[in-house]
Length: 284
Image (cartoon, rainbow, N blue to C red; front, top):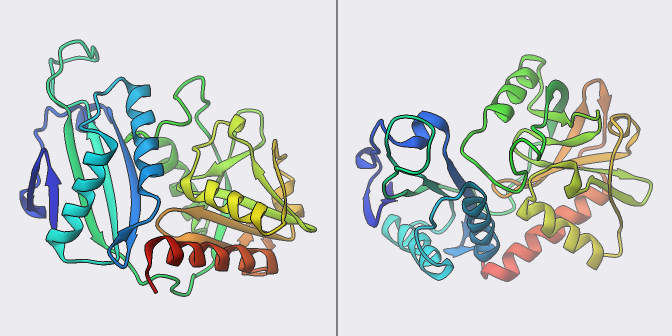
């Protein structure tokens, strides 16, 4: 595969950054991941706008305008001759003087990595969640809306969940309320109502999360974006997680609590999501 690195399309094995890059030394970078279906990017502007907000929060200069970065993404797709792909854009602060100060840094490092994607609407394997002891980093410590390259919080949470035989971690915030998962947002269904933590819980504002809320409203599903006690995970009728790579994924268990996978509401939302992807990308 060919990657885009600092203005050039290069083979993956030649896409190298120096050991002095601050992404390697400190996780001092932001990234965003999106998918292409049938050669068209899904909700590219929303992803790139979030990347811009992440860079602003970290005080890293963006590598171009939204239009320029979208053009770079399409250039990667074209060079690799792929129609279904996962693309990750990473922008680090680059290399600089030794130490934490950001005053003496060079040009940001700009990388777009490309990975072959699975076919749209492939059968989703349901997942098991495990509530873990690792807590979500509070927004007062790290901006919740910034998708940074420092993922240690999520890495440790996922490792704990996998040690318990689960596929994904369910993290609580410092108050003991449900926040999100290690690499996804989480939703519950109770009765006819869709429940999900609000953004004030210090969660990442997922693009797929926002799309699901949009579709739920259009489909007449009642929504509660609010603080959720940990007990909700055991009391819900259905559960699912969302992220940009996998879309809407049913949850079949949280700890010992089992769920229909998928439940009726989850199925409705998942079908609506993939129908929207087809409509916006022109893919089948």
